Image (cartoon, rainbow, N blue to C red):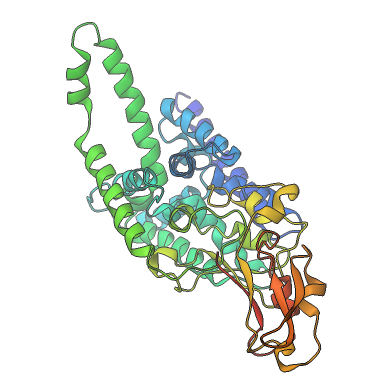
Amino acid sequence: MAGTPSKRRRLARRLIRVLVFVAAVLVLLPQAESWQLAVVVPAASPLVAVASVLATRTLPWTACLGLAVGAIGLLRRRWFCRWACPVGLLADGATRIGLRLGRRCPHTPPLGQWIALAIIGGACLGYPVLLWLDPLALFSGPFSLLDAAPAKAAWWSAAAIAAVLLLGTLWPGSWCLRVCPLGATQDLLHRFCRWLRRTSARSAARPVSRQVDRGLPRRLVLGTLIGIGWAAAVRAVHARAAPCLRPPGALDETQFVGLCIRCGNCLRACPAEIIEPDRGQQGLAGLLAPVVEFREDYCREDCTRCAEACPSGALTPFGLEDKARVAIGLARVDMDVCLLGEARECSACRNYCPYEAIAYVWDEVQYTLTPRVNAERCPGCGACEVACPTTPTKAIRVHPC
């Protein structure tokens, strides 16, 4: 009978984990309004929240959920892992299979802590390295495969989840205990809370400066410095990459590629389906981060979904009244391709521009009408590029600012 309460607790915890897993799956499924709820899953990560706050120097509302989860982690070690993490539930299932196969977890260094500290250190420079390894971000990605036009980035997330399961089978418990940066973040938070309690209890007996010196873990300092150095190197290299079009509300390019967790929320939220994953045009730093391509549709003037769906702060939310001032790029005309340059009639770009940013002026040199783009009115929505009838090269295209 003594073991009955413990058994009930395990059953209750298992039931809650399954219910949380099912709820996470339901909000991530591609439904008509699922984009509004999909942000909750990756936003629940304390690691994403801390990195977002440090990198952007702001407190987006999406970070509040993750910070609340982290606050509980200060008092209850890895409670999120034990009660709510959907990837943890899958990893535990793989661990049970591995144990039944006679596999054992080898003694390995705590890679997760190094990853978490590198992320936090990099966030101090605006580039949280490896933030995309957060398990909730990885869990969100594969659901884009269920969309009508699945994103190639979703295959990466699906492969990453498969790797987590394989790792748990071959070396039971290794992902959650040794590799997962979210679990490591909770460990660090709990240890920090314990350190505060100990130093507070001994404050009357020892000088504060000595307590700080003795209690400051070398791993914390070294891991943070590694992240800062890594972020500085990546920012320097990525600054030389060719610019590209990012979704509206995107931060500075080097900040954006670091803070974006490749969760796929913006891709799923976009009704025009103009957001695609970067296939390496920006190098490894920008791989799989969202880029904008105007092929069959444009960034609609009545839509703010992508920024609202971003859980990490890589896209800054904005209202419809600000949409015209949130620039993706700037439209530019190539008169060597434009039909007007060949003395043919065309007014497609002006007629389809929702911001009335294009006008035709008479060019005395070329002796023809020439489209002129008002840079103050053009947010680079791409409507003109889609409407342009020239093929295969468009006479008017949106270029990065």
